[in-house]
Image (tube, rainbow, N blue to C red; front, top):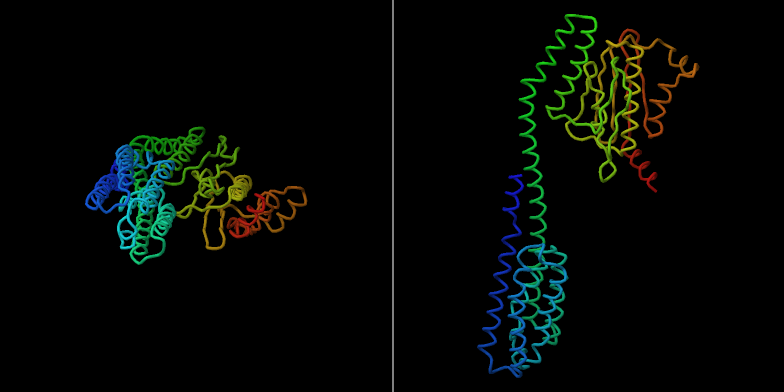
Length: 407
């Protein structure tokens, strides 16, 4: 996708790798220049010459290794750091004690910082801390003690490398966030385009079938009702509502023959909105928060099944023309789902009578499910004014039960 390619071209890492490549070459030339200007002061100059020969070959041969993060492997980083540490520890053998005590540079000089920075760019501040600590230890061994200038240089490299490593980590997170935002923006534009096309064709046809079917009556009225339900579902989809993993299959009478299902995310959580979305149709309205309502997947399925049982009761006892409303509220400590209908209501004592006759739809399918989750289900019905079922799911209890089940 063009947006994703643009993000890759904008990557903050590529300029860092290029700068590191240039730094390694320039710092290598600088270290050789220092050696050339003080060549006659070396005790064993042949050691310095041999080391610089290795350094030149290594730096030039490994330039492709510091071109990007994929090429810069852990094995290369370890070998690169070993070259730097070896140069530091060889300095007392090549140079005079007086120059070392007077603050003279090590054989690799500032080239060592490039090795540490490679750790920072590749692995972040933690890798940088490990590499800079190894360099600090080698410098202390080379000097024979913590001299002021040595400590100053060590702290400078340590702080700078960790800071750069931290900045790289933050930049990577920002880059991923930007890539995700561009993907969402592209998907939103595509959804809007599809919504315009669907509105100009499919939705208008469904609306016309609904009106003509209602006017003709008979089997045409049933066809119009089904077209109306599909129109509502399609409008919800193209307007950006949650898309369920699997939708409810309905028979011609409008009854649910299969409950919703959802695949849990990587953390085992599921969005309750996606599980309830299949229940929305022409006579069932769903009101939900704009943000995901997350519950452990098993608990979310149980709540959705309880809502399905309540809607089955509406269809069975209030008639096919009764309307129902589902309201989802995501409170700080609990999730409340309310199912209300405009049917005739439940006569007083009817629930107790049904339970005595062995009909346990409310007692088991609704209240039993919520009780197992540590929640509650309250049913309020007034004859002639409909029925309201309020399901309360405490978040703490549900998550505790989910963790206990995992053990």
